[in-house]
Image 1 (cartoon, rainbow over the protein chains, first blue to last red):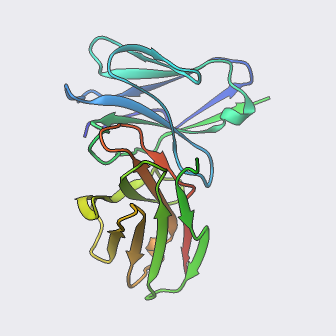
Image 2: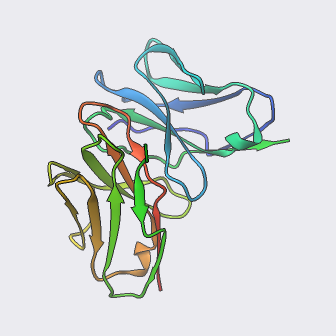
Length: 110
Length: 112
């Protein structure tokens, strides 16, 4: 599975848009990009998945450039409840095990 | 519709003991995976079960074993516990052919 690199931590304020970028230079043709959110002492929760261009759901948007070597998770108008660890995963998540890195710890302040 | 459930919530054991953790997948899901998450780290894949057989395994010793039952529920067994086995153990389930995995709340294991 492709290795991913993302910032260790980020800080933001309520109401701001947060963009978390993930680098995955060795992404394979069949790989999807998936983001999970995890609150303390809870299991990770699926946020969004994409293959190319842009994907949007009720929670977030995922931007993927044409070369697919990076991706950006965009959280619009964050609130205190968005404080969590966000993981970027790359691979064929349909069949293979999920490979988590250390994630990005997002702290949202009032 | 209940999501993935795990039991127990917390568990304290001593070195050398054995432990069994249990997982019930989300309704309609047939594939169960187990992950170990040490404090401050991302989850690490232990193994995956489908049709009552272990299909994939991560880099974990044979002390870690599992089982899947006909109703798709699963158990994780860890023998000869070490202090380093202290972690949050997560179960995830998915429906065959679908990408999204749903995680349970985990079992917090403390080895003294």
